[in-house]
Every structure is written in structure tokens, then in C-alpha cells.
Image (cartoon, rainbow, N blue to C red):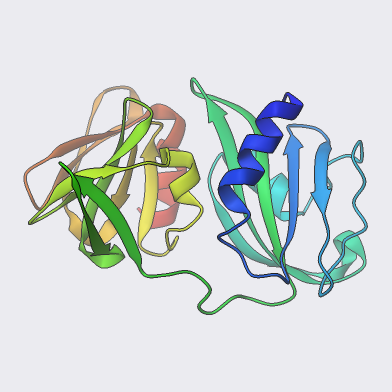
Amino acid sequence: MEPKQIEEIMDIIKDFFPENTSIAISDTNEYLYYQPSKKVDLKIKPGDPVKEGSAAHKALTYGQKINTYIESDVFGVPYYGMSIPLIEEGETKGAVTAIFPQKPSPFLTNYITIKIDDCWYPIKHNQVIYLETQLRKTFVKTMNREGYHRLNLSDLELFLAPDSFIRCHRSYIVNIDFIEEIQPDSHSTFLLIMKDGTRIPVSQRYASYFRRSLGF
């Protein structure tokens, strides 16, 4: 990961988290960047390996966003980690991890603002049916509106509740509440029929995680 990419990532996420948040960026093996906070400091240094059992390691292993409490046996201090893998063309390149002294509740708005023509509309997260990558932006679909958000899908995934939203494809995140039916598809994958009639694929990369998350 190039230094310019790290700067771009920090420019996107730095305003979304409170001051007591530490931020770590890694590739698939080691940490590339670390910004500690006054509340929690894991003493990470660039070049340190990604430790097994850490939030970053879990995100890299499963290829999915991870929100989890990590015990003190990993870094010497307990923390609550929110980590998301950075995926390019279907390949995991690294992870961005937000580190909190305790579970944030709540710390982000429950709205996502979309643009339709020349106007912006705040949409509650629970109204979103699915999100789709389109032309380096994110297409957001609700029962009543559809529009675009400026952030890409992986950046937006940081701010969606993992108990409601699940990534099922590199191009799609769906709201579980709007899944009408799950149909078997070829090569051990699935096809989702959403309540608005949209048909969304679950790719082979995400199929196992999808089954495990929904318990079937």
C-alpha cells in the first residue's frame, strides 16, 4: 500500500470518529500506520506484524467487517475494535482498524445522505434495502428513493451496523431485514430476492461467511 493511499484513507475517515479513537492501517501482514489516542494506545509501530486474535487479523482472515471486544492477552490492554478489510478487484490488500477503549454506543449518525439530481436527502439506515458499487460511488436503494453517496462501498461499510447489514458480494451490501428469500445458485452460492424484487448474488467469496452469519 502506497503512502498516498494511506493519506487518502485517513482524509476520509478522520472526521467520522471521536477524539478517543486510535487508528491502525495494515497490509495483509504488518501495520503501515498507527495513530494512538489519549484513551487507548496499543503501542503499535509501523512494521509490527498483525497479531493473531486482533481485530485487524480477524477482518483479514474472514474478509469481512469485524466489530469485536479484544481481551488484554493480545496487546496487553483490552479494547473494542472495528476493522474492515481493504479489497481491490476481489483481493484483500489490508485493513483499517478503529480502536476504542470501550464499545461506542452510539458514535455515528443513523442516517446516510444520498444525492438525487441536485438535492440531498438523509435516509435512515433501517430504510436502506441494499447498497451497490457503481462508477466509484455507492448506489443506495430504499423502497421510496434511490440515489448516490460519494463514498465507495468499502468506506461506507465502516459505518453500517453489522447486525443489520451484510456484505454478500464485492459490489453489494444488503440489509438483512429486506431479504425476502434466499435461493441456491450455482457453485455453492446463493441468490437473494429482496422485498423490492431486486435479485442480488452472493458470490463464492462471501458464501461461507453469509451462511455462518445467518445460521443456515
